[in-house]
Each structure stands twice: as C-alpha cells, then as structure tokens.
Image 1: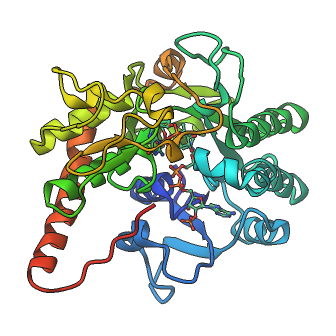
Image 2: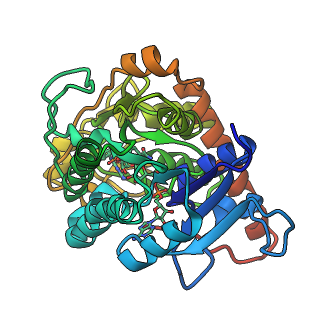
Length: 377
Ligand code: NDP
Ligand code: GDR
C-alpha cells in the first residue's frame, strides 16, 4: 500500500466508526472523520486516538459536518480527496426511526446520495471507493432463512426503508457511473462501545447496575426477537476488505447463528451470577425470565414491579417488528476469506466486564457520599 492512503469516515464518533478509525490508523492510513457539532463533547469513543491539530504529521483529522448538508459534505470530500469513503453515519436506532421518520430518511437515505453525488461531481469516481453501511433490517419480514445476498428485501421500519434507498442508490451509481461503490449488509454487531439504548448494551449495563444495587429492574420490549449477533471489531475489518477487491460486490456479514433477546438476557445474567427473578402471572420453574410472555404483556398482566428484575414494558414494542434475522456469510468467507473471530459468549463476557467495571466505580462513588447521575431512557 502506498504511504498515507486517505480514508474518510462518516459516523466516526459511533461504535463502528471508532473501531474502523483504529483499524485504519494501524494500517498506516491518514484517517479523516466527520463529527457533528453537539452542545457537549461527543467524541468519547475516539478520545484515545485523538491527535491535536498541532501534532506533527497528524494522521487522524476531524471535520465538523452533517449528512443533511450537501455543501458541507462536498467541501470535505473535495478537501480530503479520499481514496476510500466509509459511510457509517446514520440515525441508526430502529425504534427512534418511527418517531423521526423524515429525519431518518434524510440522513440514512438522501445522505448516501449526497456522498455519491459529491464524488461524481468532483470527478473522483475513478479514484474514490465507497463503502455503504447497509443492514439486515432490509430483510425485515423475512422471505427465506438464512438470509443471503439474494434474499428479497421487505423492510419494516422507516430506518429499514431509508436504508433500502441507500442500498439501491449505491448499486445504481456503481452501475451507471462505474464507481467502486458497495454495500455491506451487516447483521447486528455489538461491543462495549455499543450505544446504551440498543438491546445488547441495555441488558449488560442494566444487569451490571442491578448487580451493584444501582437499579432494581430491567424493563424490556419484545424479548422473543431473534438476532444474529457478532462483534463490531470483527465486522469493521470486513468493511475494509470489501474496498480492497478487484471489483465491487455487495456482501452479507453475519455469524450464521442466532439467539433470542431472552437468551441474551440469561447469558448476561449468568455471567454476572444473577439469578433472574420474576413475580407475577405465569411464573415457571425453568428460570423466571421464561415466564415473561410478550402476548401477556400486551394485556398488562405480566408486569409486576417491586423486586422483579426483568419486566416487559410495552413502550419498547415497535409498531412493526423484525422477529427473526439469521445471516449466511458464505460469500464473504469464500471471496474475502473473512470469518468472525469473537464468539457470542466472548462478546457478552467483554460487554458485561466493561459495564460491571463502570457499575462498581459508581457504587464506590455512591458509598463514598458522591452523587452519581446516569442517563436512562
Ligand atoms: P452508531 O449509532 O453508534 O453511530 C452512528 C454515527 O452516525 C455516529 O457517529 C453519529 O454521530 C453519526 N450521525 C448520526 N446522524 C448524523 C448526521 N445527520 N450527520 C453526520 N453524522 C451523523 O451506529 P453504529 O456504529 O452501530 O453503525 C454504523 C452504521 O452501520 C450505521 O449506518 C448503522 O445504521 C449501520 N449498521 C449498524 C449495525 C449494527 O448492528 N451496529 C448493523 C447494520 C448496519 P453522533 O455520535 O454525534 O450521534
Ligand atoms: P435492531 O437492534 O433493531 O436489530 O437494530 P436493537 O438492539 O435496538 O433491537 C434488537 C431486538 O431487540 C428487541 N428489543 C429491544 N430493543 C431495544 N432497543 N430496547 C429494548 O428494550 C428491547 N426489548 C426488546 C427489539 O424489538 C429488536 O427486535 C440494530 C441497529 O444497530 C441498526 O442500526 C442495524 O441496522 C440493525 O441492528 C442490524
């Protein structure tokens, strides 16, 4: 690789953006990232790799920007002249997309078009390769299992629909203008850096807090949903690999295994040594979480707060749900030589350890008479 290949990452402050920036810096890239202006610092995930603008030979450079602002995006791409663009920025929360559908369409759908069009208009179509963060949410109401690159799409949320537009506009620019642009259809991937309101992190953080007496109850939505969960650190490597091929191709990235949200809760609880308790109708012998039944929760009979540790709160239900996702990563294995390294159990242990550390620190602070304020939703 020639020295100082340049990459531009949108969404660099997010989970994937932070792992990808680390990965590319290690590979010797000059990495540019787009961060949003916020009223408080929003760079926690990348603070450890931050380089002052005064640094000699600065390799990690941040730009203020927003995918809703075409002129800003065009100017940054013109200035950076990137060899590779990783479009990771998105309003990425499926449930929130039902509350902010128009904004989600603007950022997740049209935002992708803004990048493709900027590259085309700036005459960079031959130089700049583009990775689009596509998603298993495209499959939505699944038409076949496991899902492959050929499975038909049927998105079930404003997020999924916006990402469907982004998927096809990426394919369209590739076919129309010969651009090296491709979609990574990634299944759920998590890590200790996962946003706190996604289900995996909500579980590990909530149960870690419960184990330290900082919270009493974990309120969940549809715990029967099935997902194919991998580790974000493994998945960003594939994002890079997809841009190093002779020709652009879209790939499914998944582990090929699925478990339910309910099982995820039980695994995290076991790691923390918590016996989950549930009091209310339908208590059963196997483990009290098994007694929580989404259908009953609809009728408001499965929830009893008090010393209950896990309860269903229908506020976390979605207007339309994606019940089951299971990916087949055979093509990625064959053509990219890619396989996930981290097992689900290893990932859960890593996430639990991280959240337990924080919970213990907060416990210590509280016991020493200091206030602890934690964001909740
Ligand atoms: P995160 O939510 O952790 O990160 C999203 C990033 O996008 C953040 O840096 C966020 O900035 C930024 N962003 C949000 N809105 C805008 C905007 N209007 N303009 C510029 N930047 C914006 O997501 P992940 O890292 O988990 O996911 C990365 C990408 O991959 C997303 O596109 C997501 O939809 C997609 N994806 C994720 C999967 C997963 O399981 N994680 C699976 C499949 C696809 P800020 O920090 O300021 O909020
Ligand atoms: P998802 O991830 O919607 O698959 O999108 P999320 O972790 O939010 O939900 C996974 C499943 O868990 C169920 N669930 C809950 N979800 C949340 N957030 N909170 C709860 O309390 C809760 N209880 C049950 C959900 O209903 C769902 O079925 C993620 C995002 O990263 C997207 O950006 C990405 O495209 C897809 O993964 C692949």
